[in-house]
Each structure stands twice: as structure tokens, then as C-alpha cells.
Image (cartoon, rainbow, N blue to C red):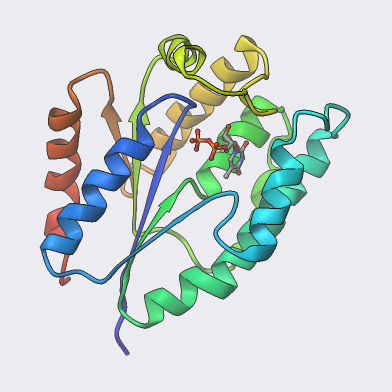
Length: 208
Ligand code: TYD
């Protein structure tokens, strides 16, 4: 059976994930890979509907547990409908955020602790990334970048500075705990330098 490659990107809000993801997608396509790009929360019809409920800033009364379950529900659908079938076909899947986001934002940021892992292991089963790129940027710098952008802030972006500090701490803990899978890259360098560091990690995994 063919097996593809499952790559995820993680990082705080404003860490530059989208730019790096699109550069990596182009490089992989140029290298002849059949790439599928998706994002969380979202990526399927049902998951996009859940996304709009989660991020709607009108939903200020949402309980932390509700939030965690909704992210996991969106993820379960994405795994079953998109990610697993693509990997079975030998495709390279890049997902903008995955389960580590729930650990950082809900377990650490919202103080839900280990329950988040339990919920998510039920949602994703064995479907874990082969490699995770964590873009590390001081959350205060990330926040300044978000504030400088045009457009409305979503419910999570509007959460307190203290919340985003805890999220970042969560990511650093995850990087230590899963040092084989999670590759932390300081994201305060130029776009090209960061892209090069990412490519150095990913390219040896192609065709493995
Ligand atoms: P999005 O607009 O996709 O943000 P970004 O461009 O930073 O990825 O919004 C997703 C938001 O949801 C983001 O603030 C992180 C948060 N999030 C969680 O809190 N838990 C999760 O499990 C996931 C996937 C995202």
C-alpha cells in the first residue's frame, strides 16, 4: 500500500504560517509531489460550518469545553473525509494547524489539561502527523502583527494577552515532549531564511 506524508504547521496567531505553507506547497509541487493543502478548523463542508460557530465573536458565552469539543468534531470530519483518504493514495498532505493547536490553545490556553488529549485521540485515532513545523514567535510580536492587519478579529484573536502567553508556553512544552516529530523554528528571521530551514527538514522525508 502506498503511504503519503502528513505535514502539519503550528504556531501562535501572527507567526507567519500561511506564507510559509504556501512557499512549501509550491516547492513540493515543483519537486513532483501530489500535494493536498487543508486547514483547521475547516477543510470540509461540515468542518467549515463548525469553524464559523467557533470563531464567531458573537459567541462570547461559549464554554471552554464546548470550544474543545467543537475543534475535535471539526477535526474528526476532516481526518475521515480528507486527510486519511489522501494519505492512503500516497499524497503529501499539508494541514494548517492540527491536534497540537488544541493542546496549546485549549489544554494550556483554556486550562482544560489532559481532557483535551482524550477527546482528540477519539477524534483522530491513529492519524498523527509525520512531521510538525512549529513557527516560534514571541506572542507579543505576533499580536502586534495581527493588530496591524486590516479586518475584524475573530473570537480567539480577541482573547487576552495572558491567554496567548499560555498558548505559547504550551507549544514550547509540546516541542520538548515530542522532539522527534515537532521541529521548532524561530520565525523572527526573513521569509526566505525560514522557508529554507523548513525545506531542509522536509525534503529528506520525500520518497521515504
Ligand atoms: P485562523 O483564522 O485559521 O487562524 P490562523 O491563521 O492563526 O491559523 O483561526 C483559527 C483559530 O483557532 C486560531 O486562533 C487558533 C485557534 N485554534 C484553537 O484554538 N484550537 C484548535 O484546535 C485549532 C485548530 C485552532
